[in-house]
Image 1: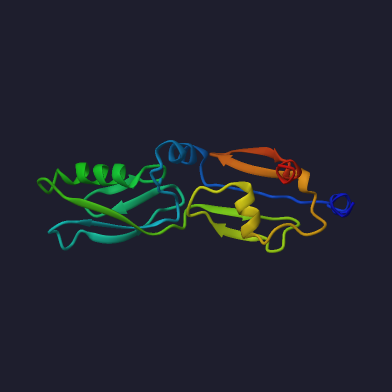
Image 2: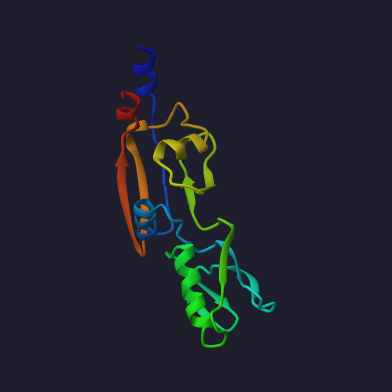
Length: 173
């Protein structure tokens, strides 16, 4: 009875999971390699080249700039792929460069939880995350949340898709 009453008063939960890019997530799921995202802070260094060690922020357009290399599209690429690309571009100036790319800060993947949750806001997504984990990070739903009317919003480029999620079905097992 209490559970039915609690479900009856649930109203108006909107959950928005906005992840930077769908292709990067799909690629991550299949290879388990981290894909660079805009906002990430990387350190790029070339062994035995003092002037070629730099911390860079991946720009909102997904690119970054590095000496002798110029602009490189980093977003959606694995660390290994980015190392290889920077190394290939440096070969014009340095024979057999040994390039290292390290992720200093994962600021590119964010999850936004809004609506009738205890702590709405922006949360870092440093690993793959499902709706239940996002709700947990937001402190769970309030008693007034409409648990079966959750919407997951995903963006791919300029396209946004709304995916319905029925928490009640999960709660029932």
